[in-house]
Amino acid sequence: MKRQSILVLAIASSVLYSLDSKTSLADWMTLDKPGATWTFIHGIDGTNIVGSFFDDAASRYSGFLYDRSSHTWTILDADDSDLTSAHGIHGSKIVGTYRTSGTFYDHGFLYDTSTDIWITLDADPLGALDTVAKDIHGNKIVGYYITSGASHDFCGFVYDHITAAWTGLNPPAPGGPPTIANGIDGGNIVGSSNFHGFLYDGTNWTFLDMPGADVTKAIGIDGSNIVGLWYHSGLGDPDFCMDHGFLYDGMNWTTLDFPGAAQTVLSDIQGKEIVGYYEDASGDYHGLIYTIPAPSAVLLGSIGLSVSGWLLRRCRTL
Figure 1 (cartoon, rainbow, N blue to C red):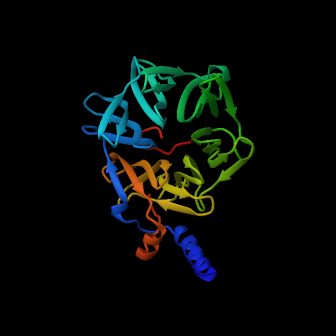
Figure 2 (cartoon, helix red, strand yellow):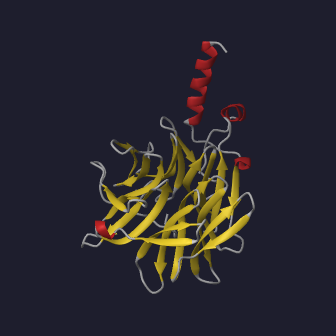
């Protein structure tokens, strides 16, 4: 291919990927836990998907592991819990949060499917009142904790489950409370801090703000691709506090909303697949899988990449 042709394609692709436009329904798939009232998908690794669901009959939230290769659903409930949510997965290890019966305090957990062993994760060395584990990669787990002091600040953390070392994440300005570490891939961590998204490589902090948004939350990362949500926080805005998904490739921002959905949250990404959940017009929540079209397919079809935490919809401060 001639250099001129390469340049034209690169420019066309860049312009197209920056557009917020309609996506094809063929690129979207709804994935609901059978019998569940609501389904929330939070993480993906290989053929495995994790999340949580609400069972109206039992009046409780439970975590789940779904194996797409065998079409098998496994319910995940921590011992003595009345609320469990699986947030992240890497290999045989799953992390998330649970709440014991009769309390209002959250505990993180590490569950190994190969050994069927549950380990409670509490960031007590950091002064935690509540602990929520959000994602795992190798021996590193990220998430957030709520301080036990009078201010009850939200602070990010990294936990090494091999050395049992806890490290707080405190980004510089414009970051600050509330800070949440949501996703990890290798040495890169994404999250939200003081209403800005962030990317942290262990040394440098890069703040991520969806153009035109008041609040940006980076949730999942795979290589250079980051997914999450954004929304407007102005009281007079007709789109006030309505979540929209986004894909950011390091250069271009693309809004990704499930077709016809009231709200969309994108939780994780693996290659060309993005997972998350959406709220329909009736106020019910469904898990979703979005497959990013090949650039040539997007270009020919003039489609563009326009796909639009914890569980009930409200104007969050995290």
